[in-house]
Length: 124
Image (cartoon, rainbow, N blue to C red; front, side):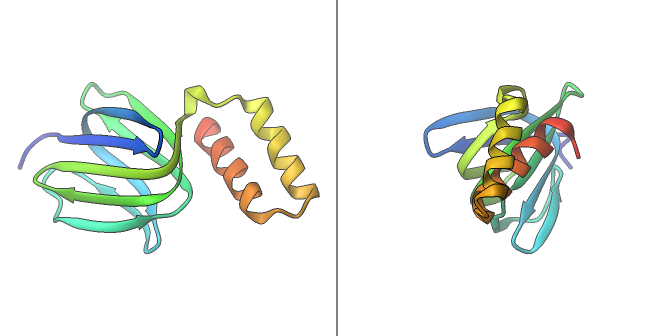
């Protein structure tokens, strides 16, 4: 079994992250899934949620992902997201304001997006 897999996290507007990893955890419509090298081929639909990538160097990369697809074959994992941003790109105060605004406007979709962004940053 290979010790790492190649990961591509791509949003509609850009390549968000690319590299080698030992583990990727993502939320799909079937529940959370962890993908390690040698995983069986898969194709799934991504739910809004944080994606956690454990890199080959031992670092952890977290991204807020909103919708899209996940596929894995031949030790290559593709995460094709409608929207994705790395945790270190997220402005926490702005995300908190967006969450409060969405709650006051009873906008469930916007509330979910803001909540996912905050969870990607805080790890909660």
